[in-house]
Image (cartoon, rainbow, N blue to C red; front, side, top):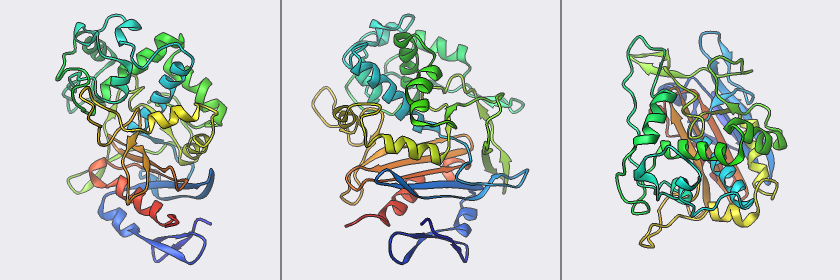
Length: 350
């Protein structure tokens, strides 16, 4: 049973008396969160899925468990899964230099490996966002900007020398998936992940296509909400370009209990902290997944944030509990990871 609203508080029934979260609708308002949808999955079954607030302020559309949000960097776990599918099939190897499969990349990156891109240890310098102009409806780089970056990027450190989170390494992984599979990024994910799992509301974002139950993104500026600026979805495709619902993300989590997508040892490899050249363990990341314990509980997953959206997918492996949180607010307004942890902790058995 998911629970109900009492005095504008979110209450969850976890098998006994309802337990009340400290996150109230008043706090949502104080943090400038228009709408939020969440789901809790335990042992592969949804035990709670709800929405609060508004998915669209202009049309007064409530946020529900069916609302479709930009999931931002949660996209990376799907990209990493697609790469590992190709690894299991022998079509590429984690130690392959990306130059073995991709042409037209900067000479500086020819020795960067697939593993280093997945673990954010490639050393590739970050792409500098194109400054936006007030009159523009979208900002950040165009596809042409990114292709120019691919051909000319530099290294901020030697590959494997240090960890530095970087979106655009996953842009390269998206290109790698397309090159090796012979399909577009969206086609590959649709055929190999989304369709088999019944994730019918998950896809690459589009500002043109009609997406049912799409939530609008908002920014808080000068004391009021405004429609957030949009990013070019064609460039964020493999690092932050997907949209989904908490119900679809729950289907994804259930699949991680099986070998429907990848073999169990492969999931284990992705959920193990990466290592640098000197043998030092990366504190917080594996292959496409954040790996950070919480109160002694093994935790993997990913958070995401972009213009107008903030998201969290948190999976407690041994407890068999997962929490999905999707909100249409700028990421600075909400500590999404802390909220996911608080919800999950209500279900810990010890």
